[in-house]
Image (tube, rainbow, N blue to C red; front, side):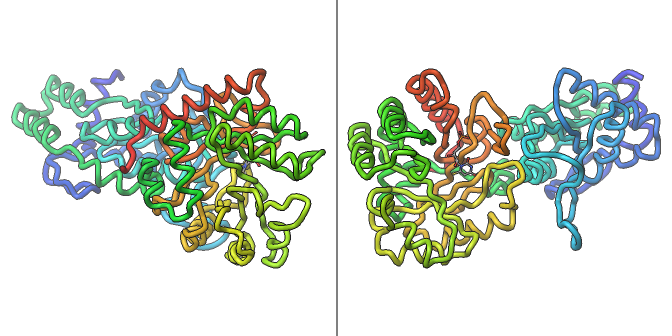
Length: 469
Ligand code: S5P
């Protein structure tokens, strides 16, 4: 059966109906596509599934996922016919057991093609994409049988997904007209309806709360801590949202790297407890370079203990972090007491905090619930918290930045649990404000050049996205 014959058959089976229908978006439509009916016709289900499969034969991917419920039969059939793994996004969260929203066997960083029967507003598709991406799955391609041509596919494209469909509604109508199944009036009425009922993108965008992105100007205006304001000034002045993670082993390597990448970064991130030859003098040298190149010093200490210990760790010699770090990271696994303790040292006038809300590792325990709670704690301390380290979530408070590690243009994994995203994905799709790049820079032959490349990619990606000014 070719595409035209299939379209005529679908009409005969009542998949395309004329009348008065209310869509999920609230829109009144003179026609309705009811692909749920096809489960009664195995041959048709198989044929449509093959048509969908033909759209992805040039792609490599790990899983198929159908938007519930209408597309579950399609993804299942495709998976069975082509021996592909399928994953299932639940429509409601399970009340017992694992409470997982996505069932199946997958790993963070796996790629997935998502299928829906029809794309109209794109809302159901977006809901599924968000759930899957929240689990760390990567999605580039989405499929549907019919694009209703009402804006959903354009919006999905806008968000960086490639939409592939078997038919557009216009093609279906052409086939049905040629086959004598719809008359001229039904044909023109439907086309007029399509042309005059485009979806309100703003409504759909508003649903993607965690992807809201802000301009650095707005962030600087809303941020409360002076270090956060300074950071946005540096970002705007140097046109760089790159933080270099200088995870080297010796002081000499750290200083050489800081000098090389200095012109291209807004912050250098250190793990000074990893330096085999740490002395307080090295901090003096690093501060000179920070002044020379105008960047901040970010000690990634990830404080995580009870308040009493965190206070000691922040101030104790030989590192004396509180005396020199512009920014430090803190976990909130112990609750907000870690933050309160750091504040109680009286040293946070010149040091701002970053809350680690969501980690980049493959099997991280920072699930959605944890991350949301961590974000709330960060927001409750917005006077001292500059931002969160997270992968998918950005605070609704423009003044709290989203900083994202696990960024690399060439790699997806490091073999030790780390997972990577491309900078473009981070800025365009996730609303990231500052990207943190370690091995992508310091493991290269030419860190200076590499940092320049990351700087340019990061800045281009920032300019490309739709920022809430
Ligand atoms: O979730 C996280 C949080 C952090 S701060 N995942 C991370 O990788 N990091 C840090 O970012 C990590 O400690 C390391 O310093 C850097 C990533 O380095 P890369 O070499 O993998 O780019």
